Length: 489
Image 1: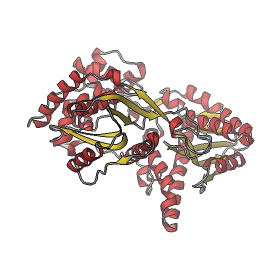
Image 2 (image 1 turned 60 degrees about the horizontal axis):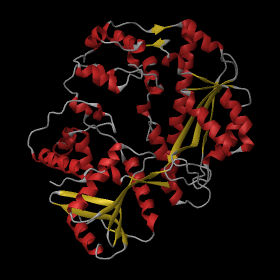
Image 3 (image 1 turned 30 degrees about the horizontal axis):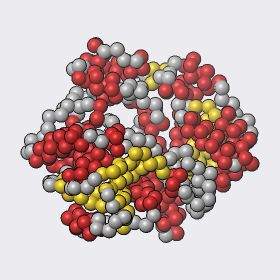
Image 4 (image 1 turned 180 degrees about the vertical axis):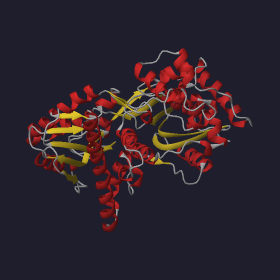
């Protein structure tokens, strides 16, 4: 079995992760990383043009053919080869971009991230080691990642879009060789390694085998504690043998909200409601009341002038509103069809028509909506005054739940709307996101919108309808939460 650069970095993080991915991949927790992989592929393809003309080694024919094709191309110098592939014993790597100079090589590893992570050093160090062992002089090893301060104006400038950082000085060939030898033994052994839980379960990435590795722990356990309790704190408690809720409450000091979360489980406490605190929030609301929610996507490679990599691009909103006390619940909505242009312009124009100045506006976790409104106000000066006025009048409905002024056991230490709604209204099918068609959560909404231009007319209409129903439920959920807060205060 080959040790590749991805398997090497898995092993650097955790030997058990490497072994499980090789022999028991089916026990991994399912996750849809298609959008992440697609972004990585697009960034990688874009970076290939950094050094002019290049030759691309095809992945379609397998490792051995890639190595043979690379050998042929290495006879031409100077040259630039993308996906240049090398094998030393049972160690294989493909280099994203290789500059083949007359007296050595430069290797460039491309990442879709906007910052340099230590695991990237391990990744490129392994590649440099394979090339060195294959007889090449590695003159330079560089990481290429996204400059999140780049603002697109006109044609995309890839030399400003990317940051190239020389990390040659960080490579320790002796250390890499020792790790390679150790990891080769791991992937050849029949028995699952006994690595215990550690910070690497969540850093640099969430491990897909975490559920598998914690399957024998009591439920609930220390890892179920919410309220921003750091994972490092949980790991520390775990290694001191304080794993069950009983252990934690007896022997540990955790924040007050986490303590209350645990007590709600152990003592089967009834709902906690602080009516005076909730009443203070409710008294700050006035009619007409608007309930606002945005949907957005992120462009890793900005297409719209004036935007940065990974900037949130709003394409949709839902707006429930009530004009007067005991008034009818009304609804408006917007979903852009400007697929090739800037969906935010039409959204801002319609939003300013739908929400009068100085209106009482609510959002759930208002930081997102306020940030988007301020960004769009800078982009569209003609709407700036109105957008900023909306932002200044937004009141956050999450506050009572985040402050634990309203708490029930089912919230399990969290205050997101997807948790609070079923906790307040259990078994209500009209409020169940699972009963929606096609779109059930934010990332699905983003991907759905981006797919619209590629669909048939009938498919587009169906998906647009389901996008609208998803976003509508978000603001209807806010109305129901407001009603519950009104009731208890």
